[in-house]
Image (cartoon, rainbow over all chains, first blue to last red; front, side, top):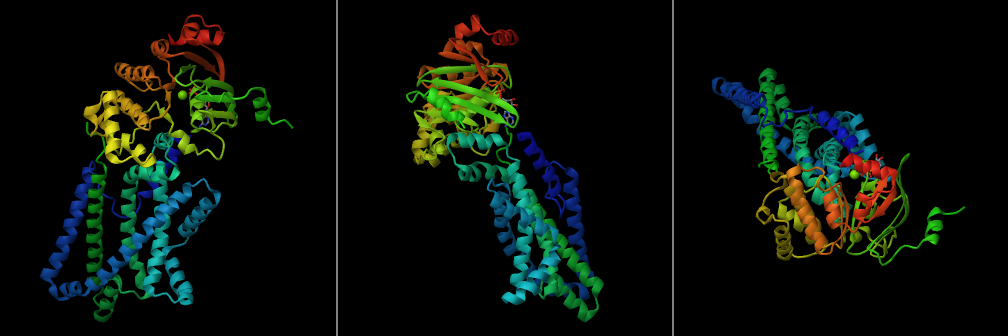
Length: 269
Length: 258
Ligand SMILES: Nc1ncnc2c1ncn2[C@@H]1O[C@H](COP(=O)(O)OP(=O)(O)O)[C@@H](O)[C@H]1O
Ligand SMILES: [Mg+2]
């Protein structure tokens, strides 16, 4: 029984590592150099372009920060809503209560079955017009609920990855179900959970580019505005792509540093 | 229709003065009958060793006592309290019954000291300095006072198991359950764990121990129980069971393990 749950946890974990630059694993030397080359490449290219052809490139660079701020803002708010939703969903999916379990499972199934762009349209144009929601609010709702569902699976797998013996030891001491979850299981699950959650955050940041279709001036939309007026599509989108790349690479570096700190209690005999 | 539980209890009332009293306890896992009509009274201060082949239901018997496993039918009383009555909070009852597992199950994300203080501080609302004093006292008792700041992964198996025993004791239980506490250990570490258990026995703790350490059983046990295929097949003094086994299955089992 215990082995079975471990197996599903492992399968799940494999599924999670799909999107975005993976947080660096210290043991994987190749990935570190891949990260380094990508980062050096993007920084040098961007700097080179701005220095040698300041006319379009530096002008574009000056044009994007407004949008960048919006992108960060949406990412930050959405992540801070998506993570609690993910935690609740993950706990719900593991709940023995059939009602809570079904609600969480149906939510995950529905969200996973509908493309994010479609959800965004639906919330902004269908619900937004009924409820008078601004584009910003619609965008945040769409992204948080979508990524909340994805993160729910991450939390579920992470919790399942903690050995059942931990739960039994805690329960045998007299901890109730909630205390066991929050004091014993979740802190250990965090090590499994943090890297894929980091991936989801990076994926979310990239997916904020979708909000440019509902009239939000994020980086991509600012770029499109600039390009539309100057016809410098190639130059503009090159800069935008490099900016996204640099940000996601930096984030993946941060994630790997957090991950390293989380393994403080590992074998250090 | 006759309710099998009622029918049984009418025949044989539980011993409310016993530390543990089991009446007509059955446990089914789908088609597997893990426990077959277990009736057991263990008095306060008594040391009982359970032996039996793998899969005979020893762990299940132990785990039904603190309801880590729910009995399918039957009654279990701890210190005269029915653990299946809704009005009795199982989490409260478990605080009184310590358990030591084969795989230690220390909390790896906490230091040894925190492993010992977390339950008393959270559940008994004891303040930190008091909990730590008591934890240090227990660590001294199991000979690991210098490991208070260490994390479990830095310890050997024998050390981890001693910490696990101390962790269970930190809740000041009146009963201790041990499920093959030395089976996962390298041979040279078995002694240090058994020594701690012997000391605990000498202090008068009520102990139920699943183990194949015959030396320990002879030295400590008031009673040995031999289980096979989910049932208690034979029970008695260690000397009786080990030197004059009656049941052919026990004779065969002893031949195999000696
Ligand atoms: N969680 C479980 N699910 C299904 N069957 C189980 C479970 N736990 C134990 N069993 C079965 O119950 C029987 C008794 O197991 P157990 O109490 O672990 O025996 P022992 O501790 O004596 O080796 C075995 O046949 C085992 O396969
Ligand atoms: Mg067992």
